[in-house]
Length: 150
View 1: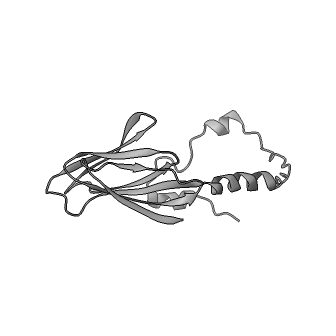
View 2 (view 1 turned 45 degrees about the horizontal axis):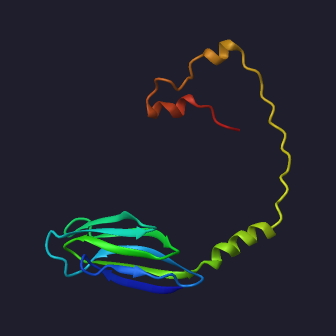
């Protein structure tokens, strides 16, 4: 894994180029420290010809947003608003996903022990309809209504 970071603004969109065998894990979007008072920024990602809003940030309000976004192909980030946004994350190998699925297939399934269901004692309709002794009691009276377990 290696750290990645950039600053995106309305005048400076950022294109993320795919690194062979790597995924960009975008972890956080944060307003730049120099954001004007009350400024806002909407972070937008363009992928496959479509635009998607990822975060909406406002100085003095929600100034950062935790993300869990994986980017595995060319994408472009832009900002709509008057404040810049710092994006941080890291590159990780996309082989980790392949290794995890390989390990699941290589691990033999554990055999489950057959468990017989517990026998239940039939209850008469009269007992089933009878109110519980704790019903209507106050919490300090509940301990008196219960029988001790032996």
